[in-house]
Length: 215
Ligand code: 5RP
Image 1 (cartoon, rainbow, N blue to C red):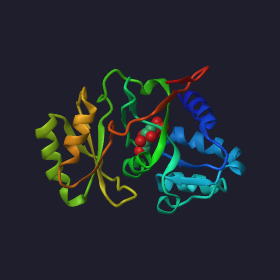
Image 2 (image 1 turned 135 degrees about the horizontal axis):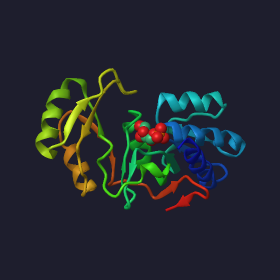
Image 3 (image 1 turned 120 degrees about the vertical axis):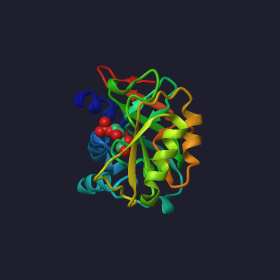
């Protein structure tokens, strides 16, 4: 699948205009995008990064990493996903970067999601839904998610997010109304971010292949 990821990432470069500050997601597909961005870095103004991991790779390439508080809203955000449904709703957070990813997606005019074909699903939920939680609320949130959804929350033991929080991965969901589930789980005290990107979903999905599909 890594070739499909690379092909999707290369195609996304076509969405980068001269002088742009580009929002950059996190993950192995995005790593290919950062490498491609490095080749055209002379014609961009910099990047806003969604994780320490992506920041390190951007800086290795000499791409300037800017603060979202200083750039204001962005024209373009490029990120991967763990699952993508036909309505361009996503599950994200496999790399635990969901909170900063959701912030940049919200701040961006266009969200281009780059995936390999294995990420396309008819209904979200086969991939366990990541939820970032404040550490003291871990058990409370887990019980509440179980009660509200019937899904099984599993603590991603050993993972601490860039924001100092924990991740619960919710198994055995079948998310037929992603906007409603995102809204509902967001209400639980202690939830920082739900890894459903439905209210602010992708605008464009690029599925890697020969040729890449732009949806
Ligand atoms: C990180 C993410 C990633 O976009 C998602 O996990 C996909 O990763 P990859 O491109 O490595 O398959 O949401 O939090």
